[in-house]
Amino acid sequence: MAKPADTRTAGRKPAKATRSAAETEKIRAALAARRDELRAEYDQTLSEITELQRDRLTDSAGDDQADTGTKTFEREQEISLANSIKERITQVERALERLDEGGYGWCERCGNPIPVERLAAFPSATLCVTCKQLEERR
Ligand SMILES: [Zn+2]
Image (cartoon, rainbow, N blue to C red; front, side):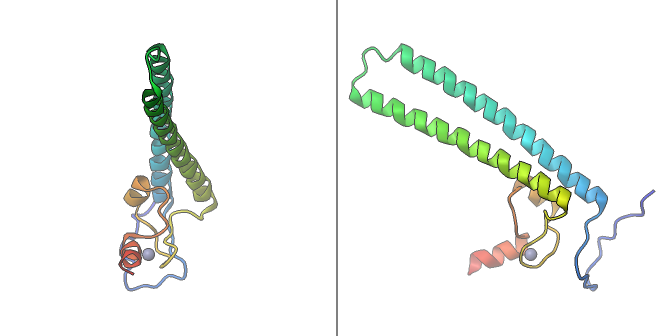
């Protein structure tokens, strides 16, 4: 049985903050869930693109140049959406790798652990909320 995690680290100044194994597991689970979510979203977007493209091809008979332009634009938008989802998947996968190496989830500025909830919401976060706010105020 693991002893309860010590959350009251204030006052002490650890050379390097530590994260409990349970917390690391929590982050891993959150990241993995996020990755699965994004993958589903990506698949969904891809099949939508395919479907829309099929529709566009079938009713393009009477298109003038403007219609064609709009359709091209729409298609580009969808593809860039798909690409940005893919990028987020890659980010989450990298985060999982770094988590295994112990280099993930620490604030780059103050070195404190970034809260699990924040990491789950923003897997690419490299700053804790406090430092992020300081950064934005500059
Ligand atoms: Zn910080």
